[in-house]
Image 1 (spheres, one colour):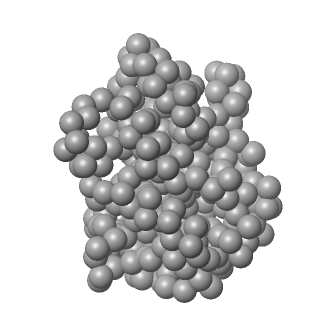
Image 2 (cartoon, one colour):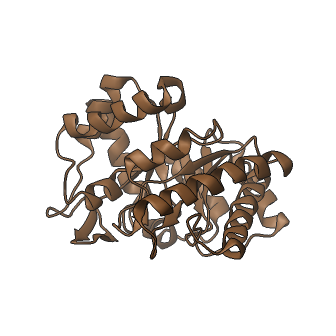
Length: 281
């Protein structure tokens, strides 16, 4: 089953008097949405009590719960101490996810820095291989880890690189942020065929079973010469991508991902728009 939902709480959520994320479960369920992503982007700061509270709030609803790990993870860092910190951020995210009742952790793989692209990618692959062992040792290998395609040229995370990372272990399932891909490639995603090429590359590289329920981030994104600048809403008419061609491509390939809206301030509203487009496509 394909699922749609927001990343975090949109502005209207608070404007309607809601104050706690626990209330988001009913809020999005009443909209007919069935996915939610909780962000630890600025750090894994959650008490056991809060995690349990969220788990209990979301449990009565059929919602696929995921978390986003801290943004500053960097598995291409040449400093071993900094890599250990990245391991720690991902472990903490997974442990919190399990406590919250979530089963997916989305993360940004790396930044190129002063290394060559090849050096940064190889270092990332080496450290992700080490992380697979750590995940087993720490008992978090029942969580799905989703390395994300990135929107800036200086970040590691092209579609091809994400496929390589996911080939390391079944622990990894791709997160494709189509707004990031479009920004990185200067507006490349326009037709269903454009999206289909990405989906086929994922299937060719990982197999249909691994890709069947992959993770998606979607929003329009402003971009410049170096890629991503900022997230937008569907009201923007200058930048893409549009969702309808992706909906068509997903149906052509028979894929049923979790699709998370990251639209600026309208995450749930535009998740619902995507769900309606998909239903009518």
